[in-house]
Amino acid sequence: MEKTKLEQKLKARRIQPTAMRMLILDFLIRHNEALGLSDLEDHFTRSDRTTLYRTLKTFHDKGMVHEIHDESGITKYALCSDECNCTYPNDMHAHFYCLECDKTLCLTELTVPPVDLPENYQPSSVNYVINGTCSACAS
Ligand SMILES: [Zn+2]
Ligand SMILES: [Zn+2]
Image (cartoon, rainbow, N blue to C red; front, side, top):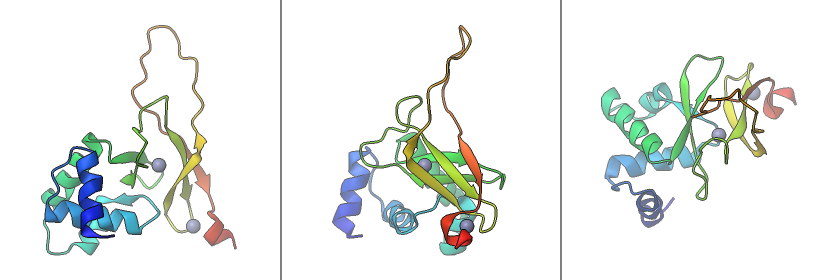
């Protein structure tokens, strides 16, 4: 993606557009599956783990990405769509974890249904992951 577009996307989330942040954002845009810190480490071999982790944390804090916890045991991150705030219960969607290729995909059209929690329970996040075989591995 163009540099100016990346800058705009970051600014829209009130994130200061540094060179590193733009590189990581571009990397996330180019992948349609959720990525973990180790995926970033494998790609950005010259950056240290702390910088990469902090960037993901900033993205997460500002609502640029959402976290997914799946069977792999690795925290993965996926980009939120521009209109999305990724807050529960309004706009959280289900995820699909492929047991064959280890990829985690956003099923953005599948909204997580609200549940009736017992009295005095305050939800802050939800993790709705379906395990199975993705379309690429099934064919
Ligand atoms: Zn797969
Ligand atoms: Zn997602």
